[in-house]
Image (cartoon, rainbow, N blue to C red; front, side, top):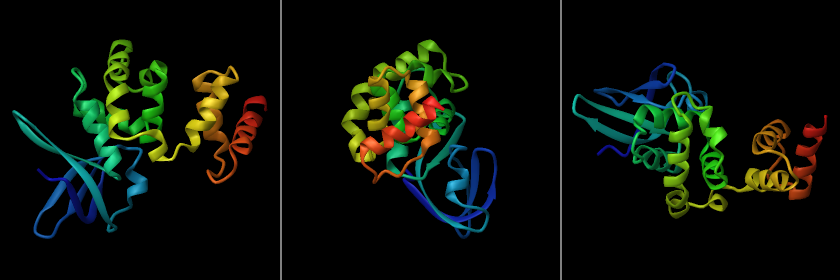
Length: 190
């Protein structure tokens, strides 16, 4: 089992990177939302990997953190969610957003992922609700955005409205909760 890879990026695609390890290079599938954060060609990168062995292939999936890899592996343990769909989910959600969507039962957030229908979204929420809580909690992941989301939804805003307001306000996490909520409310009212 290959659990992490450190090497130089030699080629980048939409959702993959070729990593030079010296005498060999590996193609590693990564969430397309992480491509720019991981680096550019000729940068050295460390990826936390999950090796998936199928009857006709061995594929490596790489992530920028151990939590992202654990989330991916939790996703693909669900019946009907394969590695490609798991990668698509991880491309749409940060780990914190994934935990929040699962904990709040936000089927609409999952339905925006290509290939995830209402039944699959429900299955993901049902099966991950307890599992992600065991693996790590939102507070371990930095609960700043989720606190603001919870405050906005408690005020009657939908989770989509709240998520968009938090994204647009992009306030510093070291500010008091009241300031972060106020900044998000300004985006909702304006």
